[in-house]
Image (cartoon, rainbow, N blue to C red):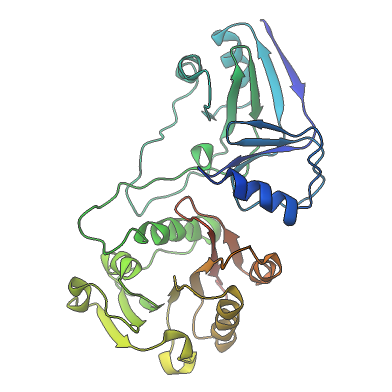
Length: 322
């Protein structure tokens, strides 16, 4: 056996693709981190001096207990990893060929694109990244049950009116994972605010749900003609929950200021007319972390950054007691 393991202080964060700078800004402005002796490994930011219990939204995966493995051969690192945990997934930014040989010696984990709806795995998955031919940064404990914190769906390039549908697919899978809530179905009544052009409504209709869609502009013609869709031309945020009535799910992907969305969300939750909400928190410039924290404080709620989000976050609320 020719390997050694060195436990490391702090944590490491794998950013979402092309969003490393957003991760840096969040660490600076929200987590107030000390960047002394920090290191960058591709899209991974290692912070040995972080003392915040918070974890950044713009990290698709957190190395919660990082360590180095120094090894001589591919066989050595595979033995080392398997002695620590069963399941491992890689993040490669260098040494791609050597890394593929390492992965071949570990238990198989599918990283194929998924068919919606799907279950998010419930078994912990460690992560490792090769820093050079003889050193790897690893963590058996991470923040995600997804391989490298990533989920991708097989896309439909013909039928959805917009690619925004992928955000709702991911959000519904996370809602099911976090809160054990059922996916919308043919017995479900949904309300979507600002539904045009209809990407989210398209997902819900595909699950058999009845959708009351409100927007000033009409949906795609195929949805306007869909018997599962009732459309109203109106500013959705000016409608009171009592005017809509009881809904199993309430959705919003509307472009608006976060504080306006927060007020609207609280009105719905106070009304008691829904138990499930999924809303996109659109950022108008710099992130207002005080507003984001207000969303996160709402009971039975999670604020997440989706793989299909850009400069935005997603609020998921599912209250089984409602």
